[in-house]
Length: 166
Image (cartoon, rainbow, N blue to C red; front, side, top):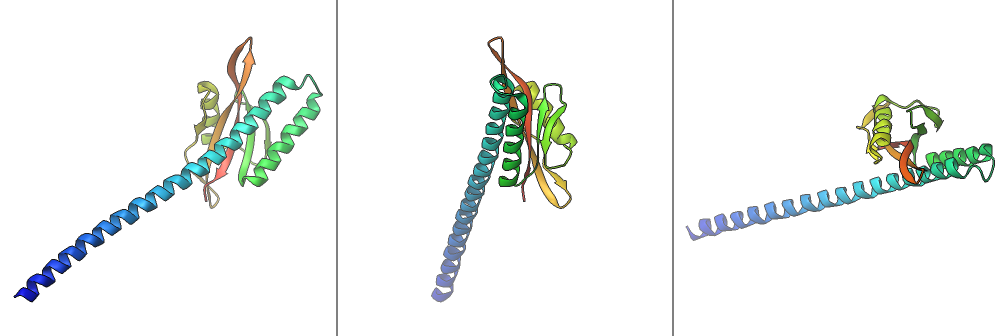
């Protein structure tokens, strides 16, 4: 009888510690995943911000040197970023929503176009919903290009990055 009670208490304690360990492991896995996603997103937003700043400078400082050279510098930066950041495409979109330049040889999806228009309208970074293109899941990141007009900052366009989630 004592042996049965002792066995039952041992099984109960074992079950309790197993559940506790499982909860702790799940919490740690969720925390690691959240950190990884935060770092991934921070890198993508940093890329978009640097390209938006370069595009802003191109738009305002092209008087100091020829617009052709400024455009070539911007295009080289876009191509370099596309290759380094594993982006499926990068687009510069004007305030009217028209694509002014791109690298990657692909067209923007409807969701990416919507994110660009919303970024321009709200002057904040916008994300499209994830999409599957071929066998790759992508996310559009649209960062407004801020311009100064008569001392007032306003969005003059947007940079759109197609980031591979896979």
